Amino acid sequence: MNAFIDIAAPGISELKPYTPGKPISELERELGISQSIKLASNENPLGTSPKVSEAIQSAIPELARYPDGGGFELRQALAEKHRIDPACITLGNGSNDVLDMVARVFLAPGGESLFSQYAFAVYPISSQAVGANLVIAPAKEFAHDLQAMRERVTAKTRVVWIANPNNPTGTWVGKEALYTFINDLPAQVIVVLDEAYTEYVDQNDYPDGSQWLSEFPNLIVTRTFSKAYGLASLRMGYALSHPDIADLLNRVRQPFNVNTLAQVGALAALQDPSFIERSVEVNRVGMAQLMAGMEKLGLNYIPSVGNFLTVDFARNAGPIDQTLLQLGCITRPLANYAMPNHLRFTIGLEAENTRLLESLQKVLVE
Ligand SMILES: *Cc1c(COP(=O)(O)O)cnc(C)c1O
Image 1 (cartoon, rainbow, N blue to C red):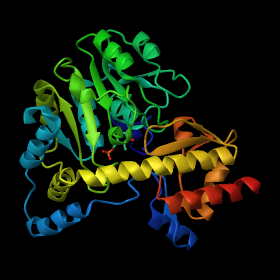
Image 2: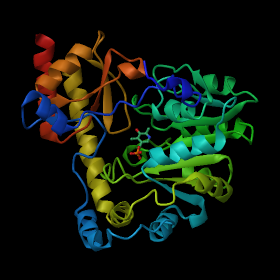
Image 3: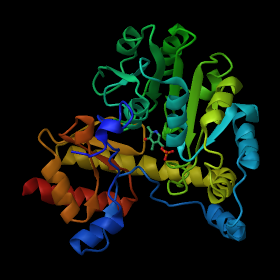
């Protein structure tokens, strides 16, 4: 029992902290092993563009200065990329920061925050922290069921969150269904379209939410540099929205939320599209390798368009996760998503995928 729970703000007492993937250093310290692999946090196995490292090196003399709180150059570059006014862009310390700003601006006790079963864990955390009521629509075969979500929109609904594709399931919603869903919502309901994995998706019917911003002033699209851009440690993400929404987000944004190295690094990353192309290709090949490997092991998985594959072990996967750790493979258990039989595997380099599959083979014959 926490001694201060009674004086914490409403919502905090029921809050469970986000469970991150175990860092490699922690596993190796605990087990006294080396050369382990981490396929737990959907990071880019290629690392980072060399252009980013160069840019960060050259910014080191600036470390004593506060960052540009307005992120002028980066917002300018993002505005060009998305062909949008810079006033529509809100920078975040990771897109997580932006999601949190949305919750603080639009959610309060009595308001409803609507998302799908198995949706990204940050939506309930950010919503509950500000005392909103959580409304969870049942998923259909682990994917968002937009009709079930629509049925749960009430006069109290303030924010609807949709990850497309979703983490941890890798499922996605198509253009027409999503357009109809948003078009059908009352204009005062905010829709957050979280496109953290958009670079990886190769489907004709996959929507680019940024194209709909002028049509839907209640739409917020979020993007991140943590996944395909390979900059998870820098913490850099952003929202695209109507300028009036950006204005509100800006009111709660911490003045220097995006540090100089993150701004400089992201700017350089935008100038190296070939790195994204290579990352997407490595992911395409690795996804095929993991899917084939899982099939060979007789394991079912949820078809994924992201950079990860979520596998069903048809029994409690906790002990499997533990044995994989002993073998030096860090993957992601999903018990906190009420998916105790599943593990989520980030697509790695070919050798990492091979090592995972060989380790799984060992685990399963034991
Ligand atoms: C990884 C992820 C993010 C990105 O988080 P950052 O704070 O930008 O690192 C956002 N949404 C989803 C669904 C994710 O999986």
